[in-house]
Image (cartoon, rainbow, N blue to C red; front, side):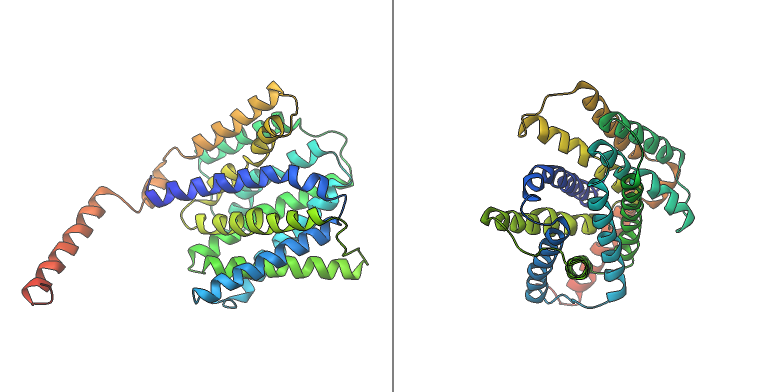
Length: 317
């Protein structure tokens, strides 16, 4: 595994851990602010902060607007359907159904992007799905909220695949993130205005929570995800991000003082096992490896040859 790939996977684990931790932060906050308005505030603030960074580093903000807004649309649909669905269904159903994005990634990868998953990837997906079932308790009493949450899982998978396509086609991660943040924030606030939702924040502590959500789970975690996808295959991205409910359970047991439940730990182990299996090299992944030994030797030889030529020409001291 290359250094960049290893660092990218570490970044994805960071994103999953951060998103898993936000259940504690958001839980009490929703009593003081409407959830859709909360989404709007956090994403607009994240977009403003990221715009400042992009301008300082002279990165383009409005290049390939279509790509960024399309990612933003799927991300907005994910947040809205999951938030509304959670108000109707149970937390366990929501957790499991949202986790189904690990199944939809290979499905949409095949149907939309015409990429057939390998046997190893298929086995890893099944094992990870089994872990999600054990961790969350599976489905109970399916209702309208579950169908809305299923939409969230599907859009999550589509978001991962399109982000993979755009970033590997050369789009700038900062630009894509700014555009999708802007779309999610604006669309959420417009939705709030249309349905006459309350925009007020009832406690000062909620303002600090919004700032935290904008900086850490939104700005840092999403930007890291987009950057990491340049080096990681989309199915493996989905299997790493499936650790979000695992981290949520860990934070619940440690910081939240919730009771340790053994079968949830077993579920987390299966998700971990699926991620490990997905990293086993296959014939196809070996063909994609960019850092083979012979390539490094060849590159080094070319660089050495160029240096000798420059020295002879008097271009170096």
